[in-house]
Image 1 (cartoon, rainbow, N blue to C red):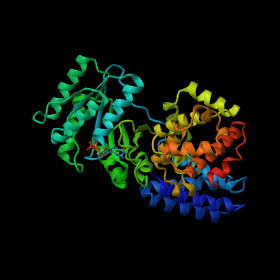
Image 2: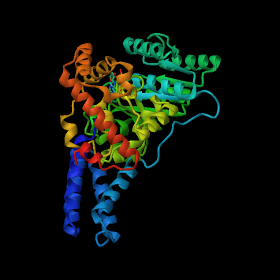
Image 3: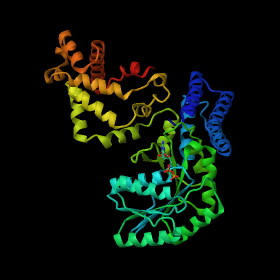
Image 4: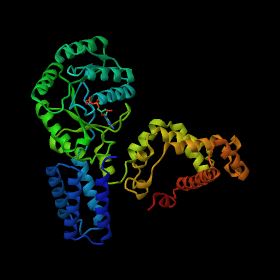
Length: 444
Ligand code: GDP
């Protein structure tokens, strides 16, 4: 997951600062030096880092923070606010044309994830707005690129306009747009050619396509894993094409995250979406405020809640809350919950969005094996209905039968039942507003 190193360093810096009752100017200087190093190490552009540190320091000194209450807390807030500003402050929605179609030109270097992102975004619009997009295959240099777009189109059930590799890209785009007009498509995506690096010929071709198509949006797709190169690429494309936004891909990988923090400041263009996986569903709107809170290790509860809601219907959630409150949450509900969690993606990633968890030592050792969830389910499925509804009747002979039925050792059955009871108790306490039990769980 991105930003791990940065989060860790920043948290350490802030923990040291919090330990001091009073923060002197020397402490502030030390803290700012730590922050500067942390950002540089995360591969944030050095000019951006310089400006960032200067702004935070000036604000801390200019206000009465050091003399006021809780100076450490206030400095964290300054850093948070500045991170948000650096990444663009507001969410930047997709431009939309007043009349159909909205034309979105996709650009980027080869391998950045342009074709994949085209499919992801088309699917998102289809799912969220019932849009009817058309994808135009304008990369005539690599037959494989056309095949790939056709495959993506099939996967998400969206038509692809292509004319092979013998027609000029500008002509393909012209014909594709005519077809979109005929079919009344409301969105058109132009998947342009990528190269290994920026070259004049490619840029001229993209400029010609832009002049013809007059796109409402030119989205540049850049790979977060390439760090400073992503920033340089964005600068280069922006100079030639005046892009309207950036999609940062592979943020699920082990990137240091510097690109996310630099692109806006360096190019003045917003990051609009982030790619967080290889599947067609793995594209999220970029929210600068949520990203800042994730970087500071404060979790990203809003995204987590949205992810849950997507797979969770409200009525079911209300019923579950009621059961927890009345303490009637049973093993059937437990299996439902496990299935929901499984649908949300790798559990480690989900957990990291919970405040305090990203950098929790517990996470380091956590290695959630999807098989464990399957085993737990097998144990529950080997219970009778009466046992699922009333776990109190699970005496040793019943437990032995369940172990045999599920093919799991008795100790595992015992452990699972114990964990279930603990969880049930904790959830019931939390529903009454008592969070004391959480601390043990969070390892604080
Ligand atoms: P293009 O050459 O720019 O069109 O790049 P592709 O769309 O072919 O993507 C290159 C590779 O990156 C493929 O293997 C994609 O599955 C992968 N990829 C694209 N976006 C993401 C992402 O957000 N996360 C991960 N992990 N992989 C991605």
